[in-house]
Structure formats: structure tokens, C-alpha cells
Length: 497
Image (cartoon, rainbow, N blue to C red; front, side):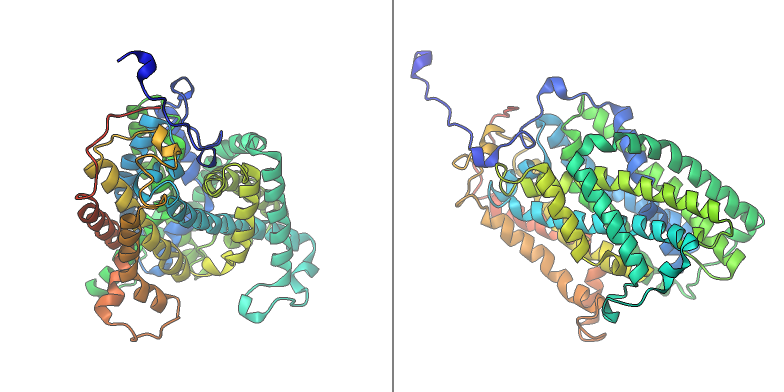
């Protein structure tokens, strides 16, 4: 057969391809081990990480129980992080494209949108934290801001002053989206230098004001029995896994730039569990110190800073928190959902448009209610969304490792009529496995948010929700393999695109 007699390859589908979604060429993959370690140090050094640790203290744990729970949770979530990161490093593809292999070229919009909506929630939470920090500063100089008449319904739990400053900070975030990601680089550099210094300063203050580490760390656990401890520990562990469950899915958005597999594996393994645990230690010590100093645990560092007497000190601290939050928000909570929304219609939805969509949904999710108390933060937000992300991770990892043995036909990921077309672009076996993986966690979630009264669900079924990510991951992954194995074609030759 002469070369001219070979059939021409099918063209790529424009509806599945854009500059943002195309594979990264090998020459552009330059991220080293240090880059990935730095990425996780930067991502971990944020106010929600501090609040994660301090919320465990508020929930009843002592200092070493809280740190151990955080370390275990981040070690667990590191596993799917590395497994999903392999595809990005090998083929240079982002998360929405990787999801097409298991969910179909059209069906991939479902996991992408679920992940994107959760990122919108994180965007809202970070924006609320930054906005409330600015409010704490502003009300010192303009006390009338704290006594404005109520304009929102009481059920919203939103005072007028904090709401106004929050909306202004939200608008600033949207302006940065308009300017583009490059505009945030200087703020990221500022964050990298400021937050470690601020964390050490806060730790020093806590140890000094609390008369040394002894009284601070001597505070015992609130749990009277081991049964009470385990009842709190398992949902808390699930919440720790849930904290980075979003990134464990869309980590290919970052590993697609890896110089090698070793770079992304080693960099993440060194950066994630260590930085999360070390920065959480600051939250543990400071929160424990607030009980010694003020007679109550204050788990929100922004509220704590508002108790300092110096107006200038509070103002500098709150401005720094706001700028740091702005940098984190754009880098961590805009880039990925913007890609996910772009996957819906690559030709119509740009990065900027995807960023605006993220911002609006982040408002509508009422972020101030999600972090109003530790139980809402852990048991409603972190555990709740892990029930959605666990099944997606289980399906994608089972498909890539157990069924396809890490072989993907990259051009077909961008074709409506390729091997990942399934039925009209949707893999219904993946959809069924996803739904069944989510269902066991629904009754416990409805009870946790108050939609069902306590006792309305069988106790054993309500307890399933405490293991939401784990249940969904293994149930959906196992079911997907059982459904797909008889239908799967022979493993194709790897095509790196």
C-alpha cells in the first residue's frame, strides 16, 4: 500500500477544541519538582487552611488529634492527585479533556460542571473572607458602617455593612478577571513572601500572649468517650479529603506543564501534606491560644485580628489578608472553572466569560453561611461536595488505569465521531455509575443541612454520609469497571498527540 492510499485522518472537531483546551506541546512543558512544591506551598498558605485546623479544635479535638487528622486526610487525597496527574503529564491535556475518555466527549461536561460549581463555591468563600477582612478594617475608621439599617432578609444572615464591602471586593475580583491572569502575578509574589512571615508573627503572638506553648497545647479534647471521638473523626477525615478533592480531579490542568512524571509526583508529594500540616499547626496553636487569652475559641483569624487594639495593626493585617486572598482566588478558583465552563462551548465561552460565570455563582451560593460555623464548614460544605467528587474520581481513575492501562488516543478526545463518542457523545455507563455512587450519601446530606429532621433516616444510612468521598469513590469506580469491561474495545496504541 502506497502512502497515498492510507485514509486521511478525520479532522478534529472545532466544537471540542480551543487554544486553552489543546494539548500542551512537549517543548512547553517546563514545570519542575520545585515548581510543584512551590505551587502547593502557595495553595496551602491560605486562610481556609488555617480555618480548617482551627475548626477541628472548635469541634472538640486537641492539638495532636487535629494535626493527625489533617495529615492523614491530605495523605489520602494525595493518591488520586498523583494518579489523575499522570494523564496530564503524559499527554499534556487538561481535566475537562481527560474526562472525555471516561464520560464521553459530550458527557464530560457533567463532571466538569460539577467541579466548576464547587470551585464557584470556593471563590465565594475566599471573596467573603477578603471582603470581611476589609470590613473589619473599614469599621474601625468609619464606625457608622457597622450600624447601617438592615436591607437583606433576616434569613440571609447578612448585615448591611459587611455585605457592601464584600460586594466591592467581589467587583475588584471581577475587574482582575477582566484584566487577565497575568495581572495577578505580582500579588502572588507578595503572597509568597507575606503569608509565611504573617504566619510566624501570628504564631509568635499566640505563644507570647498564651504564656508559652505549654498552656496552649495542654488543652484537652472535649470528647468524653472514644465513641464521641470516632463519631467526629471520620466525617472530619472525609472533610480533610474533601478540602482538596476538587484539585485531585483537575490536577491535570497543572501537571500538563510537567517536565516529567517524576517532577509532578515528587513535587506534589513533598509540597501537599507537609505544607498543609505545618500551616495548620499555626491555626491549631493560635486557636488554642484564644481560649487561654480570651476564654473562648476564635476559629476565624479575621475575627481574631479585629480584636487587636491598634487600629494601624488591624488595618495592615486586614489589607494584607485581602490582597493575599485576591491572589489565591484568581489563581486557584478562577482558572480551573473557567476552563470547565469553556468546555461547554469552546468557541463561545472565553476565559473571561468563564470567570464572570464563576463570580456570579460564587455570589448565589451564600458563602457567608457556609463558613459561619465549623459544622457548616466541615459537615455541610467539605463533606457535602466530596460526595459528588469522590464518584467522579473513582470513575476516571478506574477507566484510565484498570481499563485503558494509561493509553489514550489524544486526537479522538477532540472528535465527535472518535472512540470516545460512545452514544451521542455520552458514556451512559459512566453516568449510571456516577448516580449510583452519589445516591447513598443523599439521605445523610439532607439530614445534615436540615432538609430532613433528625431521626428521619436510618442511622446506618445517615452514617454513610460521614464517609461520603470514600463511599462514592469505590462504589462508582467498581461499578464502572463492571459495566464497561464487556463493552470496551482492545486497548489502543498510545497516541501522545
